[in-house]
Image (cartoon, rainbow, N blue to C red; front, side, top):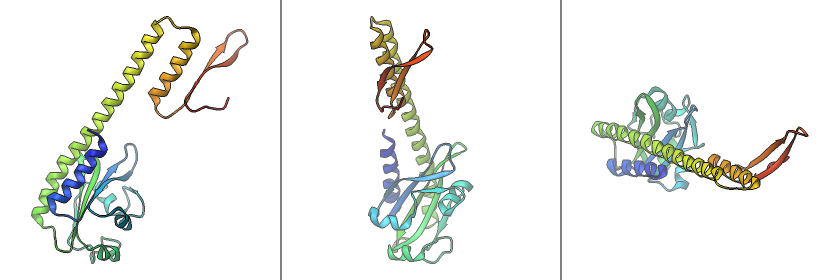
Length: 219
């Protein structure tokens, strides 16, 4: 399953499950201390942008970051008046009332934060909180599985490239064909990059450009 589809499914399901006006999924970027908004469901994107000044949040800033860092859920009965919610005016303008934010934890690792906001006619109660926590556990598992699937797919693709390269080396190829095959394989292995292959001339002790694929680098 495509990771983006998993993210969209999580936010859509959260809205449907809790009758929320907006659900947003923030995912922690591997190797960083930042969360990036990965998916949302409910509000028009133009309206939603009024709630977020930046697509990324540091773990030590804002309510979402605090939820991730502390691994602790946060519930606000009325974001229009609660001091934990920064912009009361925007919440009132968009007709938002209750907020619930839960960390998505896989094992001991926080993979993201799921937040939901309700409209004025829907206030989240304790039962909703419990349901959201259970849903968050399942969402964290789904995110980890999607990431694992992508890593396995990437590894499989790279192995296929290496296998083709090995077969090409064992075939009867001219020297220039070998150089070109190596350069093309490097581009496939490492994605949106270019590859320049240089070979050392032992007699002159100079490098000679023998193959150039993808983005061209200056000599």
